[in-house]
Image (tube, rainbow, N blue to C red):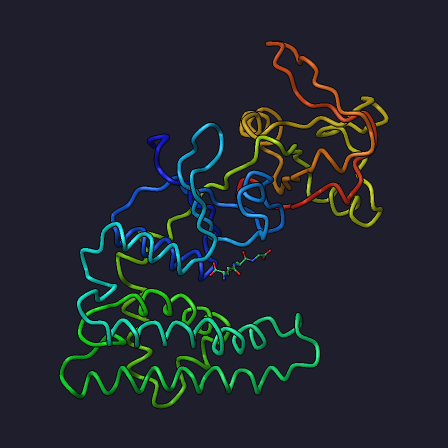
Length: 326
Ligand SMILES: N[C@@H](CCC(=O)N[C@@H](CS)C(=O)NCC(=O)O)C(=O)O
């Protein structure tokens, strides 16, 4: 990809990131997509956007710094469609429709998302009544459903504001999808919700949606260290609070240090030592949280330099643990 394309920091299933990708795709704009782990946000993302949410769109760099940064999904949508809007999603010539679209988005991002979170992530909101929040979110869905139904019966419907999609459709659909993911049977069997169910189904089956939902290889920061661990050995370490293995089949005590890799060395390390190892965990390690010395040392046969940790790996230095390969 051209070095001039903006970078989109993204998380594949985040509804805010999905809506940003939908708008960029509708605008036909190329971006360098960087899929991140929200557990191990790269320092490079936090440097341009300290608030640490995705999506973030980062303009091309000049003298090593981005020329501009957009940190809100809606602003990314407006920026993208401001460049090019072949479907007229912004309804430029129809200010009243554009105003209604903004109203729908405001309800989605405020009331609906508030209820959705308290229902979908109930454990994060102790004291909140998840059932009541589910009902309140459903009431909002029924209002959107009524708007779709009214359009359909007037003969020009199918989308929130008429017979073709507008920004509000792209902005709301990923959140309605989230409601359905949290409660598929409840959503699918809710009486009277036919137009909305159909609106979501058509979107989920669309090329526009699948184009932005392809699997993304995670972007890995060149600042972090990576270590491959056998699942059982990692489980033991988590229980003990410290990890003491060096590499497959050898302990820190035997070798004297813990093997690690930089991001660009990871795939080869896996192929060389772990490809037949079954369940492998990839640890993302923040070098600033290490307590033992880290040395860069040449490794035979080629003499490539790898990071070696001369002491235990504290669990607190491990930012994320994932299955590897994903
Ligand atoms: N208002 C922001 C919200 C973005 C947001 O909250 N994204 C979530 C992921 S879906 C996030 O990055 N959360 C940070 C975290 O989980 O640490 C926007 O519209 O872009």
